[in-house]
Image: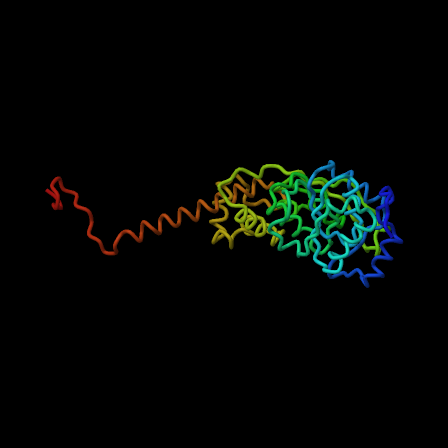
Length: 320
């Protein structure tokens, strides 16, 4: 049924279940699907994102369109990335049916968010999404890496994941997601979302995390190298850094040397370090590799068994 009044265009519980029923859609744990059916929650998410009319926004996992409608209501242009072909095909039809005047501001991309390397239209400046719980962190980091036009990100994730993303060094939940997110942005948890606004009702609470882009640490090391150090540091959380990084450095002694060169206590642990600390360690490890290669090149340039250089005053003489 075509709707002319868009003030009630957002999807509620009745519309969500009706759509799912007509499409034969049953939310699956495999895809981490939990559909929001509360208009008040949707508008809260949109307000928390701080977006403005005319802005270009990317949404990941729109599902049946609950949040999509909230974004379109705010006057933004939306590119929605959806992996489910049935849902991807239906979303433009739902918008055309309930709010046809919004249709020209929606583009749906049928693709796995983890494989997306480019998006249609102008570069998005914001990511707003209810991320599937099972791939929330990989999707978030992938989009921050591949789309540097994203200045602002507001995602709804499992509350435990939200805590990890926003945790500062020294916090018990501080870990790999915390450090890697900090490479790109400052993160803070804004609010908790109750379970009853979802269908089906999840077994865990959700929360909103706001990330605002900032410059990554100034370093000679690549992002990949820094993240390699982060992964190694947290692979065995109970180990001191000189032990945790021993394999990466080649030995515990080499790890200790690199840590000292980076100004980091070798007996500390990864959860105490900032992303800048990890960047300095990555630099020190790269310097070690460069020094070893230089020595190897020098050794390769000196033939084995070469005669000693003459020490006399005249060329070719060995002595007086």
